[in-house]
Image (cartoon, rainbow, N blue to C red; front, side):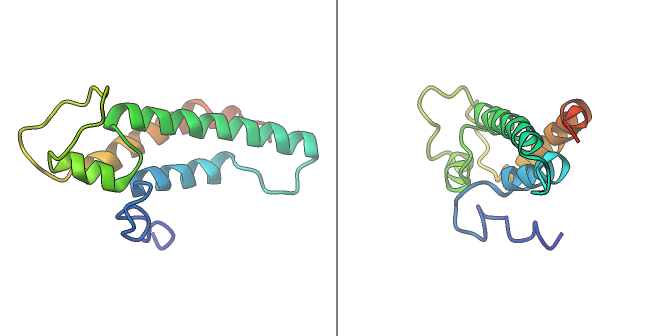
Length: 122
């Protein structure tokens, strides 16, 4: 909890990358990241694989929610704007969707860990 407690509000309230996204990336890194003591070939292979997995996660989040940035997500939650070309449904009820972002990310990371990371090189 300590390491993730500072992620809320887009990294300590700065409005940058959504904490649900940052937390998901940390989980993926813990599961499939490099340790730095691998042979150069294994290091490159592991890094390439985890980067691909993380990039797909980031794209899926953005496709589903409209942005990776907390400040953008909060603005959309308030009905202030929806990015051009994005299919996110406008919710007539203005509300904070942070719990939805966390739930979506948790579910997505669980699927990824069960299907992707377990096959990464050791």
